[in-house]
Length: 552
Image 1: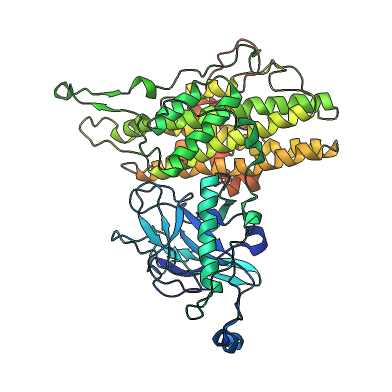
Image 2: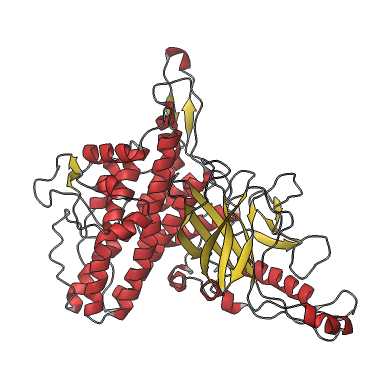
């Protein structure tokens, strides 16, 4: 149902198709990422769903109005910005609470409360008791499909078309008991309002289970539940990042990643950290970036003593996936990549404050310190979470097949690329996310097909989950590469900047065949990668010359 009252003037006239309502039943809230094809602008939204109200026929008044009060057969939906307009904090795990006003049947008086500073925003109008507003967008269900009114692109005129591409639709994990309980409570309040007439004095019905909505929790978290949070806990997000980077045990690394993500989204960890300029020697025209010891990223994350390390290309032949031994070798190699990918996401978070300040300062020693938007850190916390999930799924699958992670030699090729690009945000985004991860989009379908031909349905499911997530990771790289270039003074061409970074920091030609469809979904048209050759010389005397490592 569409709601007209109090809607922000930022709403455009165009409607955007989201999904069939049955595909939204896995969670009571979903995160949407949109990209505009003309401006390359990104937009993040949240869709909240509540059970459809049911009519209580004990009231004669309700009985009389039955014919004029058609009840929807689908959930009631609300759409809001995914970040708090106060400081940009993520609202994914915000609580939903009742206002002091009387309920009505569409829970128009319920508010979303930011977990960082408790700013409240009306679900229906976006208005806050703190004097600011969040943009909200109309929702409409047509033929069992949810549509939302699209945002207006910031860089186009008021009359411009709002033709957005939906590049990510994911359920927000509700595995945290506290979050699930708060959401259950919010739904219960809605059910009370919809089932009880203010005039009949009847007590509300008992709370009904909403477990069907909460079943989207990641089952792979069970293996890390026995690991206690670090004590004392890090005070900044960068401290969390460095802690994860310095953790050699991969299972503990996964657990700490989840603790960090939970602390960030809940508002328990509100400070990014990462250092600052020391201007004590500014009179001499010099300044340096200073960082606390606990926020200094390691040059190379430690690994378990039992690990057998070889150079890239020297791991041994993995085969074509026909035999179980071959499939184990392939999955083991992918698990190694995912373990490094966890570190790469956290290393990006740890280094970004300094690299951003240097990118915008250039040669201007007197300029202000520029910071990456909070959404940047939110995106890469999600990338780290995804990589932790991928590693856990692959480790579990290896054990189901009678093996384990660590049974075979591994290489550190991805981290070699990380050190090559540790000095520059645009270099890191280009090589790690727009080359290595984009290469994963090219090779994953072939790998999935090998396992499918071998009848390994369980591995196919795991690899498919990983592939779909990786599209969003490449998209994150594209999003922040274009953001950096568009905000540079003067603005830079992101395609040319990418190609320049690849020529400088990559070995050899970007190898096809390319998965053009999934690359385009992530924002990479052919002009980005077509006929592109890296000019960096290999530092290895043996092994592969081209350092393109798929995945990550």
